[in-house]
Image 1 (cartoon, helix red, strand yellow):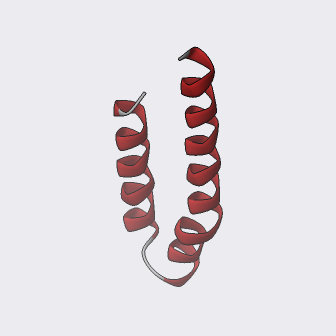
Image 2 (spheres, rainbow, N blue to C red):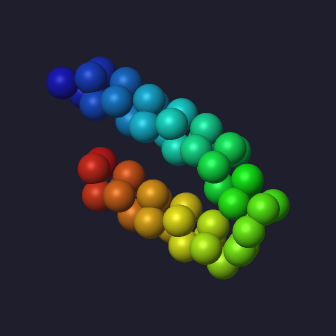
Image 3 (cartoon, rainbow, N blue to C red):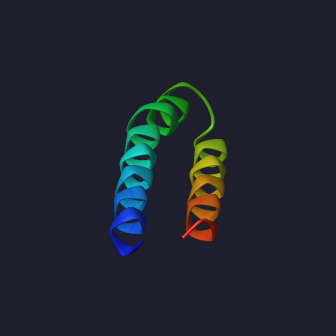
Length: 51
């Protein structure tokens, strides 16, 4: 179970990193930086709740 949880956390962190690099970065460049910050914080909160 521990190995499965570790693998799932690794995948989750990878997805979070990709989301930040692409979606949030594009939002900051194209639109409102405050909106992007709120978006990434919401994603972090959901990710932390799933741990």
